[in-house]
Length: 279
Image (cartoon, rainbow, N blue to C red):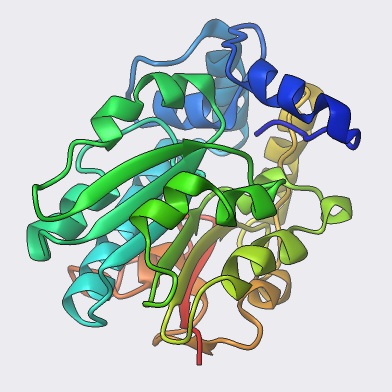
């Protein structure tokens, strides 16, 4: 994600800059792509990815667990909650099946808007926009640090009906904002724009399960110039305040409505996960 300028006169310049690939600067989307076995990453991304793996050897499986959570969330929200619209912020490089593919397999009329600011994700946006005839899938190149621009974006308003429930999904993304940037307010701008009956789904890395290893990983990321913030259960719970948590609540990501019964070790993936409904 790209830090927005505080000077409105240079905001367009910042967005233009964010559309230019800098392969010497590591980016979270490309690091995740590497962990998931993708090819859309550079040496700088792989160096940070391997440094984090040195601290937490199971990071690849943790990244895969986040993807499985996205699929379970889509099936739950479309199949059980009846949601037909999604806003996915921090999309990352397309990894099939993508969110809209899972959702449209159940309800072909589902509409999805993806949001990310990595120019490589932008380059792959066409893959994110292959939709069923009945539904629609679109991509917005934007930054979570500017949530007002997201909710007022022409394409979002064109694709999603904000008078009907929308599922906001933010998976392994809020970790990229420092506390000083007030990620709780940033996400609240998005949540406040959604009507009653909407949902929010979040995963977030935590040091609660293995503080020493996570601290080493965070230090490695910071040393490389990246922001990576691990947050506690209570800090993650703040993102859901005022909304009704869906069972089983805020739990380790592997333990959120698993497909194959309770995991042998729910704390093996160092992420909290939850879904909540807007009253």
